[in-house]
Length: 311
Length: 297
Image 1 (cartoon, rainbow over the protein chains, first blue to last red):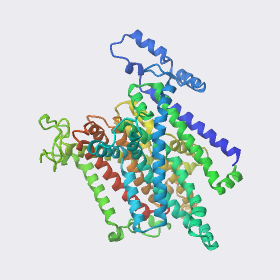
Image 2: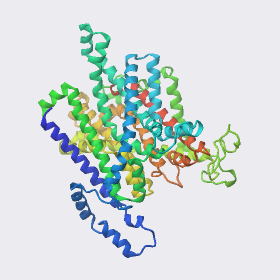
Image 3: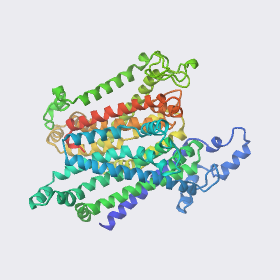
Image 4: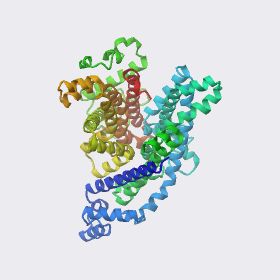
């Protein structure tokens, strides 16, 4: 893979992060003075002025922005308005919880989605294929807040098997992870099936057949590595969606991750914390896309060769 | 139809839609179409269908369960909420709001994306670069979460909300249109139009657009459930549609606080969202296989 390709991709990734950060910065400031929102109504003007100066909100927006970017480049993400703690630390405390939830959901989605999709493709147009694909359509049409609520109704309120909220034990993880992973897994199953069907129609599969490769060899050596390419791409592209759904899922199950922190910070107009969360999410998403881009070249020798030729 | 002027789609549109032989349409798809038709009727006529005013309170009939359950009241077939408001009436209005918003958002987004795609393909050069960069940017940012923050800070505004919904997904239309127009311009019929002296607007609007419309319609059906989920999720979080207005997501978010005592307040709107998105996905899949085989994934 050419160095140039990596650098171009890297610059694009940084540009995207910068755009997100800038966009969020200005939108949050367009909407009025957070100090007025944060303090009680009967506070005197001096106090308001004190806080505005403390947080630098008395400056013109342009100056605020330059200060913000300058601090950002030095690794300073600001102080939470609410409790004067370092915003970055506040957010990082929550990251493991969201990573645990998102990671489990992703494993669940891939662990079910890929095998089911491949199985359906190998038994194309049979009853089992149609059954798997019907379940998949159900799975991704099911809004995950509704799935979460149904799970709570059944397993927490009716059967009393699982806790409905919190994150103390592994049992707490089960329902949120299933809720977050189901829709994603259903999509993965569909993509895996079509990727697999696409691959089996290719010339190299006929070649493998002609060479006398057995079913197992054909599947594991010829079909799967090729089918992996679109599956990896789609997984990377959908990471952002997964993060969005994580916010909803965390709210449903009172899971103490960054999604919940975001909804409360947004309600409190805690600018520094909201900006910090946005930055971390943007970095996560852009890194995922970046890794997929690199993995793409690594998985597909044709792309590798093409990139070296082009750039 | 003007399609006749163009050589590309050889089969008539009705045939490609599967309307030529309705018998070959699977029952599931017909049911899905029926669900969507019902949803459309509700969207258009909810005001005339609801038995009560959706905001009318009746504190003596609070939290009545829906019909087959014990303690239910035939006057309120889907029960009542914490303020004794009729759930059926609220459901109808909420469905109207959700579908109208999603429809409007999807259509604005589709028009915006298609126009930008045309512009990118027509002007190429710097315009193309900028639009393509915007497309990449849109696809690479955590849009749902940004929209969440924007809504929270901008406050209770349907216009802002609709704007955010329209921006959600436009880049897919732009990408498809740009690619299709670029290849369609090289087709004989487009070149012939150009040679005959047709201006770009005429060539694009009358000759190229009808030829590339099927993949765009398919994208519309794929996008619509996403837009509904976008609306309902944000309203569920208390950020999109807010009281006194109501939407399916807002009802569900409201009902969540009463899961222990009144499950139907969450289940009724949730099930409605599920049915509409499911029906739309089924119809979308059907159209995708019949309207445009090249788009199958």
